[in-house]
Amino acid sequence: MRKPLVAALFALVITGSGVAPAVAAPAHTATPAPAPASAPAARSSAAESPAGSTSAVRAPAVQAVNYAGTVALSNCSGSVIRMPNSADSDPALVLSNGHCLETGFPEPGEVIVGQTSTRSFTLLNSAGTGVATLRASKVAYSTMTDTDITIYQLTRTYAQIRSSYGISALTLSDTHPTAGTAIKVVSGYWKRIYSCTVDGFVYRLKEGDWTWKDSVRYTSACNTIGGTSGSPVIDNATGKVVAVNNTGNEDGETCTVNNPCEVDASGNVTIHQGINYAEETYQIVPCFGTGNKLDLSATGCVLPKP
Image (cartoon, rainbow, N blue to C red; front, side):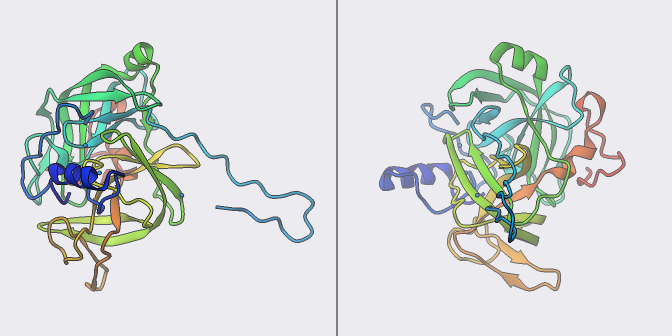
């Protein structure tokens, strides 16, 4: 949520390598910047054998993480998601950031529920090739308060998408992520996968007028750039989504737009220039019930309410 996508594109042209200061998508304005027409759409354990053991302890199996199920938006990244108990007949959902909402950034304290939307998404296969255009029927939920998420409901079910394109949705984990977990940030906009680990968690992450709770801090290898906002953060071992990529400190400023600061429980403020962040997604799961219907009053649902 830091510099405009146009600036990120310029940085890529200059460097020629796609390496630019980490950013998370359109910013500086409440209206997301459009993507160029040619773009598809735009932001890492070893086990030792115990002494005397005759065989090595095997590390957990690593899931193959690729682009299947991710989507490209006009200005951000996203993914087709399902809850652990979603049915194949349920309308599919797409997850991105609150600041990727097509009608502009939600204000602090604002929660949007059931807003009509016909937004389109380019569905990618495992190789990162666009295979279909999916369309929203509504914004099921969007906010930039406590977290930074937009969840769209689509016009097609999971079964219809899988039958037509052979692509399954990504499943949200229903448990809090763990520090040291190997992860991948998969950007459908740039068709780029970043590999790093969860460095830790931030009590409060403040950027401009917005404040997010219990954010994920990456290790430096996930140097995400503009347009990767909304990318799913996937646990390498489980293949499940544990967070959604959203921002990073670009210029070393303190608590300004594009330069989030960390605030601990005692109010102490620190900054980490060049480090990027994501918002956890496990808390979304209790808020969606039978038929993928949003129920903010459900037991365990702590998402902000309108």
